[in-house]
Image (cartoon, rainbow, N blue to C red; front, side):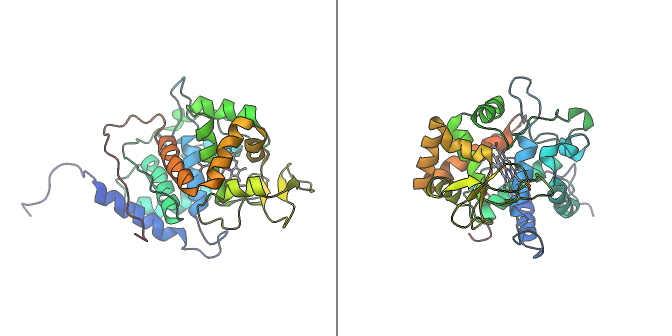
Length: 286
Ligand code: DDH
């Protein structure tokens, strides 16, 4: 009893790896959910928590985890993300020392790696904020718009054209839900595996407007089972974007390298880290 450690718990890499592993175990724990994986919606949570960053005012970003609170939780862009937050609560209960903001970003890293994606170096240090740090509505992209809007939104976060295209490859994963965004369907035939298929399909398939009463979206002419958003299609309408789409369509390794860099950067926007040391987590298949 005299050998009890003193002071507050100081988590290290092995503690974060345990969190990573617990998220990995959750991903396919519910056959009934979507394509049998919470992976895509956890990636979307990490992205929407981070993509509110504004480099001028230095507000928003993953630090704070302010999507726990209304009004941010009710912003239209965040529809459906309660599912992701709720799923992660069991991990938070098991590891109460981790902040929600570190947990949400680490969960996105776990989901990407477990879905066959590249290693995403990650570091801890985010602090949870309160409701006063909620960002105003409108900081996340509007899928009905095109290249000018993409640049307005992503330049505000500090990204360039190549990074916009690299980030967009995440749409190889998951799907649109009519009861969330109003859009419908997946982008690829393997929505629980990260590949460069988003770019390949964008270039190789023929796309036409879907005939339906929902929001304007594209469908592939060949099978009518895949979709593209107007913002996705803007990536091949715009010459400067298209050049990167073509490069990633040809070279999955290049996509993985650039995606790892830009996704890691996204998750760190605006976070006042105290350490430079980044962790690379072991995937369950390593
Ligand atoms: Fe996205 N995304 N996204 N997206 N996104 C949707 C789903 C998913 C836009 C709109 C939508 C990124 C960029 C953009 C993921 C990851 C990322 C849906 C459908 C819409 C709409 C939501 C629903 O109905 O459930 C737009 C617009 C952009 C843009 O302008 C570039 C980025 C950068 C990422 C990322 O992770 C880096 C993922 C994953 C999904 C699938 C979610 C799911 O539940 O499945």
